[in-house]
Structures are given as structure tokens and as C-alpha cells.
Length: 249
Image (spheres, rainbow, N blue to C red):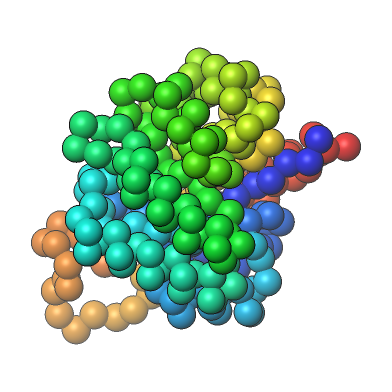
């Protein structure tokens, strides 16, 4: 069986580490504190041209909920077109109604834009806050969505195994179920045991800035730590990729 390892990335440093680790695809995002928003066009274009790895682009105009205004939906449409122009292979989005169900009208329109540009479509973890998961996934199939990124409606994929197994068994031949959130080399075997063909990972380490500061100021929120940051943990990511590739043999 052929597997795909997708690594969630926020910086070019992340992307380069994912590439070195042997990942098949990266998801490009901005704003990790919000769970991912649309990255810059420059980053998308540079990764496609200079790094040479398949790219899935997060299409999310802001953090918060997944109910978008007409203006925000127009921005998402523009961002899908820009992602295609930059050479991305996939776009990642999800739109819900105020009642927490899939917004079929908005999703159908955005999917059609993506397909016009030969882009694959991933529905992201907006799914994980919906109240009727089985209806939701069938609607994704009907819309022509390619894959679903989900933690099984739990904080971590390993805690959502029951729903992930149900989804894989009932819809997995029509829609790629891609588990994500805190997948590690320790629990990877359980995740792959579901029969899924794709996994979404982000394993990080914290690093301290080497920059000397002349004043004790921060540019963001008062409690934001600008002296440290996180980046992809190359060793753990490579370990996961190697374990997945061993399963193909």
C-alpha cells in the first residue's frame, strides 16, 4: 500500500525540515495560534519553485469560527486562484453554517473554483466541531472533496480512533480519511492500523532566539514569548516518515 505523509508547516524552515525528513507533501499555513490561516503568496511560490515538494495551501482568512461573510468567501476564492497560480497541488478549507453544519452552497462554489484549476481539495478540522459527522462526510463525497483532515472529533487523533475507524470503514473508499493531531512514532502503528493511506503530522521542538534585545518589549500580546519559537522536529519527523515507508515494503 502506498502511503502519504503530510507535514503541517508555518515557515520555510519548517518546509525544508519536512523535505529533508522525506515527507510527501506539506500543508502551508500561517498563524499557528489560530490553528492555521492562509499563508503568504511569496511563501507558496518559493516552496513550489525552490523546494520542490507537493504543497497543500490552507485557505482560511482568519482564525475563530468557520462561518464566513460574503466578503471573506470572495477572499477565499481569490486565495484559491492565487494558490493555483503559485503551483500548489491542493487547497484546504471548510465552511460551516451558524448551526454548525456544512455550508453546502459556499463549499460547492469553492470546490468548483479549485477543480477549475485542477487542485485537489482537503476539508480541514472544521469537521471536528460538527454535530453529524456521517452526514458531513457524505456531503463532502457528493461535493467531490478529495480528503478529510480530522482528529476524530477529539483533541488528539489517538483519542478519536473510534470515529476514525467508522469513517474509514464507511467512506474510506470514496474520501481519503487523513488523521491528524499529535501523531507520533509511538502511536503511529495504531493510526495506520485503521487502514488509512494518509497521515498529517506536526512534531515540533522549541528553540531560543539568539538575537540580542536592546529593550524588553514585545510586538504582539503582552504574554507572547518572542524569545523562543517552535520549529519542525527533524529527528521525530524523519522517524515517522521512515516507519510509514517501511509499511509499504
